[in-house]
Length: 452
Image (tube, rainbow, N blue to C red; front, side, top):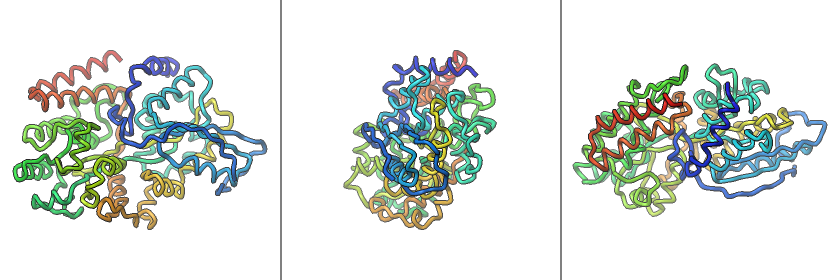
C-alpha cells in the first residue's frame, strides 16, 4: 500500500477540488446540503455524564476537529464532567473541503493532525487507503460494538476484508420520497404516505404515475435528473462503477447503472423530470411554488425543503422509494495516528456515538442515527414534524435506513459519476442522442480508469 503516494496525490489535487464538497454520499455535488456551523475553537474541561471507563492517571488533552452543525461540543462538555482528567479541545468548521484538505496536509507533513477527526463519507476513499496514518479501531475494541450499528454503515469505514476499521459511525442519510400532498390530491393520487408509497412501489409504477401526472397537470412530477438518477443508481448490489475486488470499471456492465440512466432518459423524454439544476435558485423556488410534486433525497434534505419553501409547511409528507433505498451523507469519527492517547480518545468516541448520544444528536441537530435499535425507541418513533403535517418522519427515515444495502464506491466514483450526469444534462438541455451520450460517458470512464 503506497500511502505516501496516495496522500501526496490527494494533496496535489487540493486546488482542483477546492470548490467541491460532499454533503454526504460519494458525490461532489453535495456541497450545499447541510448548514454551516462556522469556525470556533473551545476548550472543554468542565465536568460530564458517563463513567464507563477508568480514568487515566495523567492529565490528557485531546484535540477534536468537527464538521458542520453538530452537538459534539456539548457532548464533550458532558463527558469531561465525569472524566476530569480529560480535556477536549474542539475545532469546528462548516467548510467540508477545507476540513478534509487540512487533514491531508497534516498527514502528508507528519504533524498537525488532531487526536480525533470527523470524516465525511464523501471523502472516505481519500483516507481509507491511508490506513497506516490512522489507528485501527478494531485493535481498540470496535469489534465489541459493531453489532449495534447498521451493517452497511459500519462497512463504509471498513477495509474490504473487515480487518481494519477506520471510523465509528455517526449519522446517516437514507433516501426517501418527499412529496406535496396538495399536488397529489389535485392529480387524483393518494395523499397519505402509505397510499402514495404503494402507488409508486416499483419504478415502472413510478414512471406510469409520473407520466399520468404530467399529462393531467402539465407540471413536472420529479424535480431533477440528478436526484432521479441517484435514486436508482444507489440501489446497485455491492458495486456501482468499480469492482471492489480489483477496482476495475464495471459501470457499463452493471445493470442498475444502465437502468438508472435509461429510467432518467425516459423521464426526460416524457417530460416529467424538470431541467432545473441541483442547488439552483429555480430548484428551490420550485419547491415553494409547486413546479414539481416529488423530491427524491436523503433525510437531511428535509432541512433544504424547509428553508426553500417555508410557506409550504404542512403540504409535504414522506414516502418510501420504489424497490429499495440508497444513502447520501453521514460521517465517522476517526483517530489519526499522530494522537498520543488512543485509548482515551477511543473511550470518548465510543461514548460519543452510543445510543443515548445519537438520540440526543437527532433531537437537537436532526442527525439521523445509525443505530437501528433507536428506530423502535419511543423517543425516536414519537417524534412528529409539523412541517410534514405532523408525520412521524423519523419512522420513515428508519424504514429507509433498514432498506439500504452495502455498496462499494471506489476512489474514482465522483469523477465517473460526473460523466454520466453530464450525459443526462446533454440529453435534457441539448436534445442529444441518449445512446451516443451513454457511449461517450463509458468511454470517458474507461479512459479515466486506465490512466489511474
